[in-house]
Image 1 (cartoon, helix red, strand yellow):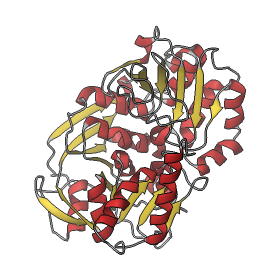
Image 2 (image 1 turned 180 degrees about the horizontal axis):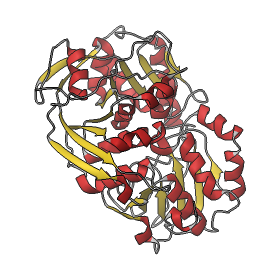
Image 3 (image 1 turned 120 degrees about the vertical axis):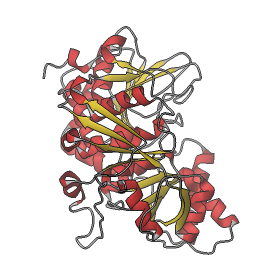
Length: 423
């Protein structure tokens, strides 16, 4: 029996010829990622009395959650993190103003490569599966042990295959695809599974869309998600990684075993929205036109990339955000911010009446930079809409694509982007 891409990566990292689902392995890690919330992992490392990390060049940390610091406590946390960075001589540290949101920043810096085993103290570490890496979110203690030893102990997950077929409509994005998939699998339908995204339609997905799909796979309970690297992957990595960098382009064997197999016809998927309070509570945007909104948020590690900003700008250009609605736009990294500025996207947003934030996770997890008041309703391109996630416990969050968020901002209600765009 052959192996899936996830199994091949784990077998290589574990020094084994093959692995099988359910088997426990000790795998060498290629990269460990974290952010200012990862301070807890460094505290655990200190409690382990580790005087050094396994490789200070293979750990990447950025400040992104509490940026800029909204409280004195948050400022003290970032100060303490900097002390650990210096103590353990971490080479890839991106301070405030020099980086961005981790899951957008680290790929654009060339720190994640196909075939890598990547672990991180953030549940959306699975984002890097878009590059053909096996990327796993873990708790602080596990990450501390990985930083000390350079390896992790885990169970080989079963693989669930999602085959994307058909041609998408012009206003159906990667966000719509993953919301549709979550609507089918539910929030625990892929529990501890590796989600393998494949099929003829994958070739038409921009890398930004692939990051979005892998990012939100965890909302279905999956351990990770992975897309087989292809020419689009190579093009994205060109100029980002050194020419002599080792990259492993794995793909699943034809006789690999899957625990489940879904076929998704992309031509049938329209702009989708996840309703409160679950990413899997999905309905077409056109069915929700009666829902009025108070706030529209575009950004996060899910949809704060350049193509996301472009999609919103196409709708917002020459239009204005409806009075009574706040629109907050968060480019996911400093590089994306600069690119958006050069292209004139930021001017479009400002003229439309939107507020532009520096790169931060703040509004996504309800930390700062745009919390919701009592009973307010938001539509957001972020990844979770749990109760109280973005502010008041009785607020409501709807998740949608950048185009749907922008269309909703100008109409003041949830709006299918096809309603305001003809092409």
